[in-house]
Length: 234
Image (cartoon, rainbow, N blue to C red; front, side, top):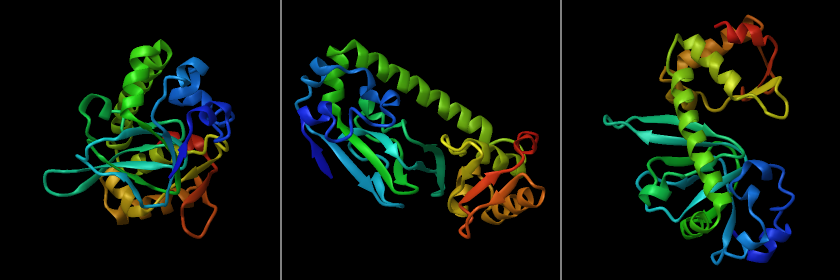
């Protein structure tokens, strides 16, 4: 965890000004006067794969902007099972519900190494009240998170197992290389899609045999999308 000083956060010594996703994050529209209102350090943090950012029900200390990597949101069901409710990617805000409840309503776990900025709740509450730009950005992020959650449920929890796996392949495509997509542990995929681990593996193999996907590594994590139309028609 590396505290970012107020002046360096704006001047860019911590890559804030030159951040590759600056136009996507909460502070994209802030100016120097806005940054002058920040009186609590923003923490630049790195979480290893499988490390939790926070746990379900934990008292919140801040929200996180994801700069690099992927993070899964996990909730426990009434019968003790875990369900992945969404996967967050660079530009997404993690723990936004804490602004209203002061607690996290899910567990956030890094799927791969994740680089985040942790912004204290006090900073967001203060800036939201004093910066119309940040307040507007917060509302946009909140609305986007709600839409993403609805889309996630609609796209990945209905239809046959093959349709769900195909939909996930399209959702997880690399924004910088749209012809490639990334999967993760099969048990995670099963929990996300609400299908058995064995079924996930079988459907991925089927999509490879049919020419929709081509494996790019021995771990079965990265695939080339070789027939997007076939994936869309599942």
